[in-house]
Each structure stands twice: as structure tokens, then as C-alpha cells.
Amino acid sequence: MALLAVVAPACMAQTTMTWTVEGVQRTALVFSPAPATNAHKAPLVFAFHGHGGTMQTAAQGMHLQTLWPGAIIVYPQGLKTRSQVDPQGNYPGWQIRAGQAGLNDRDLKFFDAMLATIHQQFPVDDTRIYATGFSNGAIFSYLLWAERGKVLAAFGICAGMLDPAEHFTLSRSVVVIGGTNDHVLPFSLQQQTIDLDRQIDNANGPGQPCGLICTLYPSTSQTPVVTRIHSGGHVYPPWAGAAIVEFFKLHKL
Image 1 (cartoon, rainbow, N blue to C red):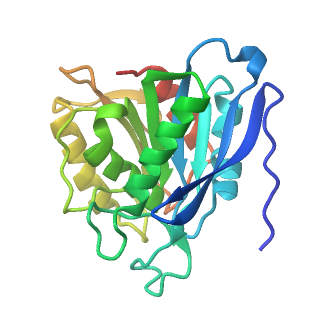
Image 2 (cartoon, one colour):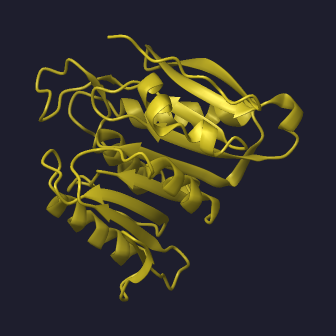
Image 3 (tube, rainbow, N blue to C red):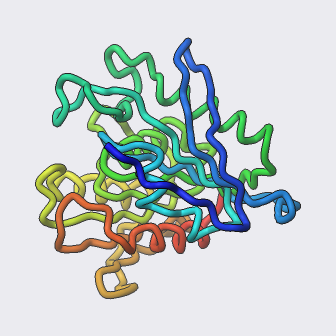
């Protein structure tokens, strides 16, 4: 399968970084503000591809580096992972719960390793660290909320849900994008997690329109929930990246 070239904006540097985690080489595609614009601490966004995706296709499809050139954008690469849609584990993906059988928390440890290295090499604004993802990558982002929420300011979820074995303990701002005709991850399951989002985020009041398909649920703890629910299926809409960046810019720890 041919991969589309990913080009960094002129004001950003692009590199592939590697780590060894539990004896396995892990990689991520990293975009960062060029040194000339690197004098101030920058937001940091981890963006996770869906099952079967790659760091390159995520960078091409989400293109957060073009939408937020002042931020450090990290597209990690998943490893082959068994799932309901890939029972043989032929394609890359992410763990969906802590302690998942046979995975030794490999992806949570990968996140920890990436965060430590990015801190060493770039001026990171610790109040503006975010996670976003599509499908399996959104499920992993929810896992990070449950297991690593202390270091993350807000989340951007597209076609994801929280695994039933996981539980939120910290309120965090979140924007959730989903399709009512999703036949891969039924929207009813996504809605169940949205209900959990609102509960932990103290956003249980009536929603307020914030756009054509946008609903804002204000929060008494300043951790609002925003939903953007479209009529499509299991897709990353072309406007999703901009909506997520717009949301992230409004929220910090």
C-alpha cells in the first residue's frame, strides 16, 4: 500500500522519533515549531490512528500540524493488535484497557516514554498536553483519560468509547465527534460514554447549541463536554481536526 507523503508546514520541523519499550522498537512522527519560533513553551498533542492505520495516514488525515503550527504534534505508531475486527492481529492498533491480556500495558508504557522524551527535547507547556484519536485511537485516548488523566488537559474523541473495564476519576474537558449511522462502533455505545463524560465532568445540565451539529454541556468544574454528532458512519470527518484544535485551544489544566 502506498503511503501519501506528509509535509510539515514551513514553520515546523518534522522528524521520526524512536523508543525501545519493553525491548520493542516504537516510533512516532513528530512535528514541532521550528527553532526560530521555539522560544516559548508549546502545547503538546498526541494523535492516535485507528486500527489498521499508521502514523503517516493519521498525519495526512488529521493534519493537526497544519491547523496548529505552534504546537508539538505527535503521531505514534501502533503495533499489531488483535481486535473484534481483526481477530488474528494482522494490523496495527492500541490496547483498550489497562492490564489487557498479553499486551503488558505496552501502549501505556509507550505513552509514558514518549512524554518523558518530548519533555527532554522540546519546551512543553505542561498545562496544555492533549490526546486525540479516531476509532481504536479514540478508545486509547479514553484509556489515557482513565489511566493518565493527571497529565492531560483535554481530549478529542472521534468514533470512540471507554472500555467497560475502565473508569474515569478526574474531570477533563472533552469534545466528542460521532456518527449516528456508525455500524463499526454503534453510536449507542458511544452515547453511553458521552453520558459518563458528562457525569465525571459535572456537565449534567441541558445542552446549549454551539453550531449546526454542535452541543455544549457547560460544567460546574470548568470541564465542559462538547458533542458534534453527524449523520454519517464510522469516519473521521474532514472538519474534525479543526473542531478538535479549536476546542483544545480553549482548555488547559
